Image (cartoon, rainbow, N blue to C red; front, side):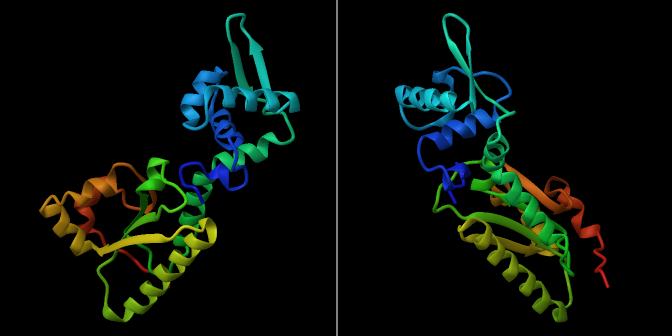
Length: 214
C-alpha cells in the first residue's frame, strides 16, 4: 500500500490524490490549492479531474466570481467510500491497536512511528512499530515472540508492506533514556500511540509493574 496516499490502492490515477485532499478538507478549495496539497499532476490536470468529478455529482463547485471552490459532496452515495479510503491510516492504526489489546503479555508501550506516523512514504515503505516489553521471566519469551510474529504478519496482510518492529525491554529503554540516545527522537516525533504508557512519560516505566491477564 502507498503509505503516503492509501487511496491510490484502488484509485491509482490523479483522481486518487485529488479525492484524498477533498475528503480531508473542511471547506472549499481552489484548483491550485488542491494541486498543492495533492502533490502530484499539474494544475491543469487537477482541474480536469475536478470537472469530471463535478459532472458525476461527487464534487460541488462554488462559483465566487473570480474563482471556483471545490468540495466533496458528502451526501453522495460514493462519498462514504471515498472518506473511508482517504482515512485508511486511521483504520490501520485501529486494527493494530485492537490486535495488541488482546495479547496475553501486553506491552508496556506500543506505537507506530516513521512513514505511517508522518503520513508519507510509498509502496516500498516499512510500517515501523515500537514495542516496549515488560522485563519478564525466560518462560514468557516464546509467547511474546509468537505475539510479535503474528503482529508482523497482520501488517503484511493489512497493507502489503513489510513490518519493521523495534522492540526492547523496560531496562533497555531505561538505558536509552539514561544516555539520551538520538534514536529516541525517531520514536517520539512523530508517533501514534497504540497502547500502554505514553513514551514521553516513559522515564517512570521502570517503576511500573505489568500484571499479565490470567
